Image (tube, rainbow, N blue to C red; front, side, top):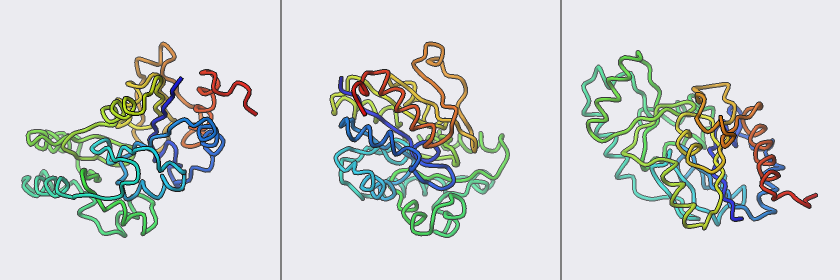
Length: 260
């Protein structure tokens, strides 16, 4: 059985506050031992994901970056920012009352992004090396946000909620990129893990989905696949929940038979 695992990062494989994946070490080791491809699927930039991919020794797998707006081949660390420039131009063209409550990464300094995300300054600088999407904080009313999203939608720009930010893009989803990568890798079974609304489609599209407990942001409502057991929820948040879910599923699929 050819299994491929797709995972969100912040709040899922990485701890919400510390960005550590230490609690997931046993499951990460099991995937490596079993040669199960692990594909990182995140709202992070390619520049942010590359160091983590190297740290986890995942250089041979592609990544899904910037919330599914991009699928990057193994080893790619940069590219054109033309799409991001188009997004920023569309924001600048909005009427000021609509635009003002949204503070995107392009409106922030490295220090301000560090404060908003909890990243160290060097990590914040990588987070601002955007190519395809613009995450930001909404400081207005719910009605104002709806009007803001509708105005951008008329220009072909989608707005998606993640664990921390409202992210703007010209399209592309984690689920769509997952399908292409699974096909290319010859996956017979897919497993997807995530904690936020922008992970929902990926979780629902996988053969096995895991909703990681989210104590810090907009979590996921009950999903149809939970009734059949195809989708499950963790009792522990972040990498601790990720670790338990991956090990359990590997065992249920027969991968752990005879393992130490």
